[in-house]
Each structure stands twice: as C-alpha cells, then as structure tokens.
Length: 362
Image 1 (tube, rainbow, N blue to C red):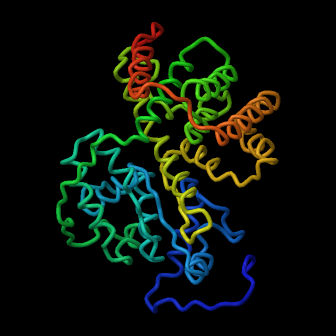
Image 2: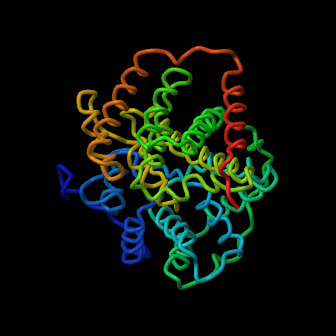
Image 3: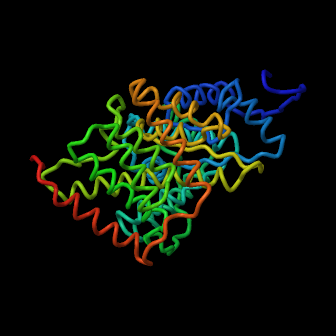
C-alpha cells in the first residue's frame, strides 16, 4: 500500500460482498458528502485496505451523520422509503451499507437533537428507535438496498422506545444561533461581501468570541462565488418567520461543523478518527475547511488556499490575513466578558433585526 510501512494481510469473511463494497466506497467518494476530520491516506478515505489497516493500528472511525441522512436510514428501516431512492436516500443507504460491512460506528447525537428541536421529543425518540433498528439490520440486506436489488431490509422491529429529552437546547446551538443571526443581519445589509465577512470577525472579537466553524461557514456564505443558496433558506422571504426558521437551520448546520471540530480537538493524537456525512453539498464544502492542518506560521497561506475557490485573489488575501490574526488573538485570550445573559440578549437583538428587515418580497 502507498502509505504503509510493511505488508499486512486481511481475511474477509467468505460471504463478504467485496465487489459491491468497493463500488459503494467509490460511489460515496464521488458523492462528495463524506468529509474526513483528518488527513486521509493517498489510497482514499474509504479504501477497504486503509480502513482495515487503521483498525489494525487500534484506531476507531466514528461517523457523524447529519439529520437528513439519519432520517432516511430510519425511513428505509421502517418501510417508508420510496423507490427508486432519491439522491440523499441513496447516499444514506450507501453509507449504512458500507459502515455495516466495515464495522464502523455512528454517533448521530446532534442529528437527533436537531430533529427534536424541530419536531419534538416524541418524534425524535420514535425515529431514534427506527435508526437503531436500521443500524442493527443485516449488512448484506443493506448492500442489496444500496445496489437496488431489494426494497426492504426484511421484517424489522424498532428498538425499545426511549424518553430522552433531546429537545433541550444545546448551549453550542445557542452560540451558533447567535452567530447565524449576525450573519443574516450582515447579509441583509447593503455592504459588500468582503465588508460583511470582516465585520463578522470584528464583532466576534469585540462583542462575542471567535466561533471557528461558524466563521468558516460565514466565509463561504458571504462569498460571491460559492454555491450558497441553501445555506440560509428564505432569508429574504416576505414571511419573516420563514427567515427565522432558515437562520435556525443554518445554526444547526454550524453545530454539526462545531461537533466535528470539538471531537477532533478533544481526541488530539488519540485513536479516534471522525468523518462527517451530509447530503448538503454547500455544508460539505464548508466542512472541508474544518480540519485545516497548518502550523500557526502557515495558517494564513493555508486559509488563503482553501478559500480561494470562493473569493477573488485580492479579497482572499485580506480575509485570510484577518482570519488568521483573529484565530491567533482568540487563542491567546479569554472570550470577552459580559452580562450573564449575554447570549440571550444577543439572540433577542438578532431576531429583531432579521424580523424587522424592510426589503422582503413575496
């Protein structure tokens, strides 16, 4: 293998669907929604030998899926999916088939917190029971669903119903919602894109704190060249509550990104490896910037390289410099102090600004 120091052999079970899994891995890679929170091997993120070698080294790979994927996995298990599968459902089936065959684990906690926040605890716990059923279905049944050879996983029953309080607001989501409201306020202003991005960094450093994943999200959202249409839905709708819902959805997107960053940071040089999975192409593009592997002296250059697909050469140089400075400043001092209910007050102010925008059209 390209990245291995010595030869090793892997014996797969006799019924292992090798050709199918290799093709599933290729399809997942081509989709673009599977993002590594580490530097993948040259052979490829989902290469079967790479995964087995990682397992041999004692590393564990955890998949962090977004809500759309876990909901579709649950729907397939429950028998509610429509065939042929739509694109996101196909991604969900491919991902579950691959993970079942390769013994990879899921951590869908943020996805179910998001679902409960929108649909309530009863629905989130019901869907969680079916997701667990999907995660315990036979691997070969998932392969057949993935390859279009079957439309059912067989006779499945949901896992025992739980009563988790998944709807309780997460502090991380509240912080990201605060930033999302500020992003929305700046987007609705008459300023230039680069001015909006720089204004957000200034606000974070003076009135809030640098929320790295949210700032990276904003660096794409404010850019003139990014495919950002679905990153903050209905922002200019005449129905201002739809605009607020769009901002809340964006805050959940940021929370998925911050969860990836948190898990990477806490794991450090440990054996855990994390992969973010999403059917949202814009969110996947932002997620690629989360695991920037650069020393402080190289940070500006690495940021500029990554952001160059979204910004002009002149603007990306300015933004990368300010972004790098902000990261270094924020890492060397505590967050700005304020009243105990600082975030609650900022949310009220931000919602007023979004609801009060006068340029809405039907």
